Length: 559
Image (cartoon, rainbow, N blue to C red; front, top):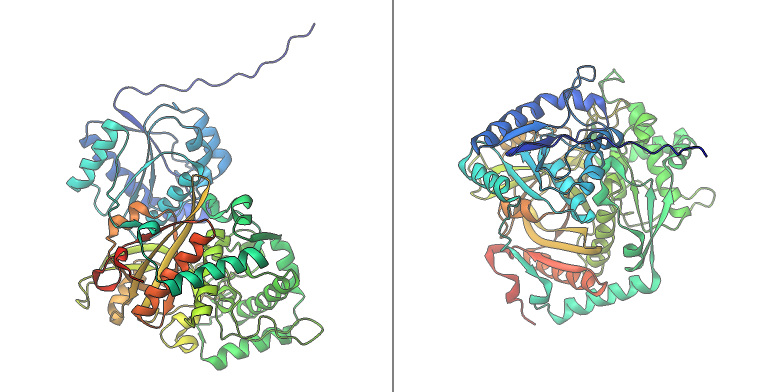
């Protein structure tokens, strides 16, 4: 009788006492990994020194790859191979100075039994804190316990103290005194009634979320499980990027020219050059105009109430970036597009809410925000932004801490100073997009906003929501912030009310934040409460973060 061949499992090397593992998740694009490696190496050197100061030793779990030119884990498969040989009970640090694809390490972290710490530098350059927040949100959704730390200077005594606490106990926590459960907030009857009515309408009529391929850029946290989405009356229409590509190729040149002419008449400017490899060209923009027409027609064909294009994977190999398309879709005032064959204007007089990078949490948030603001007569344009970076104002204009919210390519022009006339099209960085494409660059106008984030925790949808103001900074300060991040992208100077930098970092479960303007501070307060009531009526757990403008607490709301 033949013997069965039993698999042989590797035996991980056990770490010695006071040794801690370190892994680094990278991009899927090797061009980005090579360019960003210097910043990662600098972070790891500083972190290794801080760990040594605490009396421990860093053991890097994977080596620098001479052929690739970096030391990142660059794929899910590579991450699985590395984690298979690690001591699953060891203390483990995920160190990030760059944007990273969380699924490169997620499988290993889900299986890991020892304490996990995510660490980021405080830099807008690539950026690590955005990557870390994405990983934190993914771990939260997966039910993996972890601690998290960040710092501008990893030799700072406060950072070292917290790091030592984690090394000794396997856990470090942060105070979240800025968070108020909605159950402790009194919502005025008018806003509560509106929110509940909008929730009832969504559950009765239901809505279609068009998803052009799921799971962009390793963002596990950006995928809402179907059973949670169905429970709030929203169902995914799973569409293919190949269908969008084909539909784009079928749009006649004259329709693309009509869209482009509309943009120019509206006042948008494009910074064109001669080189397809490094410059923005007219042909790139015309292809984006075709994609815009195609996206609207596909959304109409499938009855979509919102759509998400995957953005950085798949389409990047055959089309220019989708950013210009996304900004147009999210704006009420935009080039009209007719249905093929019958002359009907598609989504006339309204945006088609689009969620960048197929972030379904942002998609649901955007759909709810749109409906609440429309019912209240507030500006309906809303978008996600990267929680890119933040710094104190160097110009002396404000004493408040000012965040850099910076979406990777486009916002609805209604958010910009000057609207369409304040929008500038620049080429997407070649490191990310070989075929280029225009961004919608500009400065977000001063005003009152509601910020929010829907996320998955404990197999349940949650909403964190708060208030903020967008401030105006001098051109030289805006320029400094652009140069510290990505100058081709639109920027928002945001001041969060009643939430410090570290409180926000400790609580926020995503790399993205949703924003929408209101006509006034009082209107923004009402919009927040109506949206909170709507989401609560849908069975979503709601936290109100921070305060109203001027520091007034939410728990003091009155009927």
